[in-house]
Image (cartoon, rainbow, N blue to C red):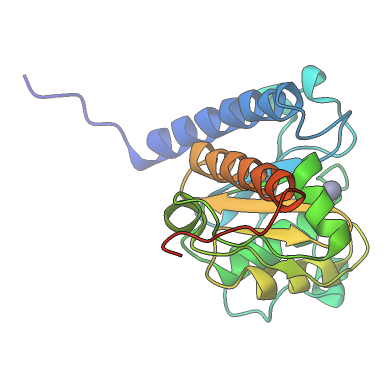
Length: 220
Ligand SMILES: [Zn+2]
């Protein structure tokens, strides 16, 4: 007897349940690692035309898979998410306040299936200095795609923040948000989270090293 074939609907349902669980576990990791405090930051996963994201203002320790919010992505033919299309769209009121940020980056980067937004201390130092992270460690190039830019400032939750982030991120796997935090993406939530870890660690090394002399780049 061959393996039991599952219908596409079943597989889609399983992916949805797995994604909800992964959002809970990675949300807890954000707090454990000190990348956020309270209910700051947010995470999302893209499944087909649907984006699953963390709800607004719920502490990570209280999150459950059922609490994740499903948002239907605007059609690819629509212009990049702007304030008007967001206003018109019927998005759930309890979705993360940074939904526009997530949707703008998904719209610009079809290959990214998961995004993590955090406020890690060392990357936030670069965010307030408005200084990009150079590819100072060997892993920065392969993991993050090269130096990580700082997106111009826009208020938290604004559509402009999403537009600025998508543009500054370009083809990299992460971006620093001026005076705010970071956004990293990946094919999976695990990958997006790992990229956040590499970004924060490299920012830490960079800022410690810079106070002690000139930083040499790989191959120098
Ligand atoms: Zn934030």
